[in-house]
Length: 478
Image (cartoon, rainbow, N blue to C red; front, side, top):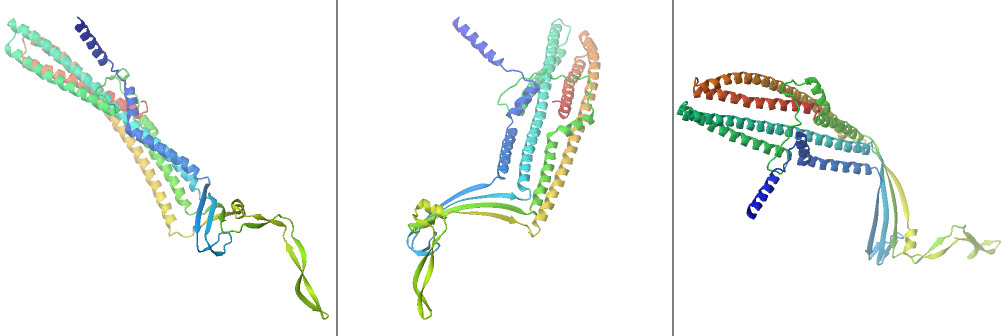
């Protein structure tokens, strides 16, 4: 009893796991596909790289600041960095400095580089959207393939069940002597073929689910779908004009936006090429000092007060009226005092600042700038032409999709009419067969014909629904 209870519990657990697969709607399949797609993720990484380039190009407008420090040891005949005098001794000296530079004007290169990088981000975003649109279309197609295969399987099963019921009836009639062995064999052969059709339909159904899972990039073995969101009526014509869909597609398809952005980028390329003909101005600032062990231990430092002058008689003289007169000299005594010239004091004493401006004026560069401008203009023409090509391709795609929808609708209507006529005819054929007034071969042919049409109706129905969803996609309704 305990073993039976455990077995029942295990069976219920397995059944519970098998029922945990939640059917997904079309929108849910699309959302999962967009979240899982690696190509879309790759473009997102590219967007992040381009955003970093924007930050870098903006910071390039700011000045750069660099510091430097060098320590040197010299012996023998060298130049003393403190006095710039040649000395012959062992020397220890240092150079310290800070330098900075900034571009004041460069023909708009920095500003245009920022704009170009911003457009690169915009272009990558449009490419991402275009990739997502392509993913949507693939998922829509795969989703309807599953729906089609699912209903095809249901129809083939119904056909098989109907034939099985007919076989049971023929077996009963055979026992009663009201049917021949040949009729029974014909029905059995027909059932074998229909059983093969069921197996084929099951394989097609499973294969269509695998295709959908691959379009969604889902690492699963099976999937269940929910068709409740498919509201398009199969008996009414599509209610949007082809011109309206074309206009919407040209305005909303991201591949068109990518081409438009390329034109904008080409226009900035012209500005960058023309900048090579314009002068550029940059400014720089250098501050530095040095220390030398060969410098004296002390240095006279003025206190800023006026110098004093003292008189001093020298041994030199002049003769005046035959008498010697000593020459009195005035000696300037600067105001200040001797200070110890240590490491810190020497750095302050040797400190210097240099401010400079650099101007570059292009005069002749072997027509390089002229060729760059011509190439940039050609790039713009190519981008504009590519935009025109893309717009035409979108319009042609919409026109073809609209025509496919019309053909599918017409085909669906004709097949439905055929099915109605065949159903009436088959009812009469079936009645004659059951009364024994029709051979089994004729009955089998009639049943095969109507079964084929029933399968064709399902195919035509989902073909039409799929074509309408494609147009909804281009009309920006999905």
